[in-house]
Length: 110
Image (cartoon, rainbow, N blue to C red):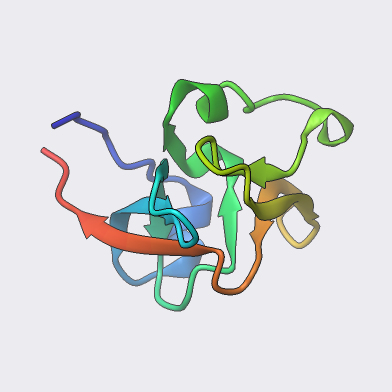
């Protein structure tokens, strides 16, 4: 099991509530997509790029300009899961997830 350290910054403090790590999978084929830190309560509507911890291909997107980002797709079946989106309220690049496109499971991190 990999070890990750939760990011604690102004964004996690603004959301309040629990911080947890989610294993994100494609709802169509069940393939692994990412490990993501979810801050606060509520459903998962978007994935902020700075909260993705795995795989390296997605972690490497931090700092890229918005126009260079491509839709988030499953590596196994190529199903499109979400689209690049600038969350203007916080000026943070993210992926807006399509409803029902992912399944998620809370995972324990050492």
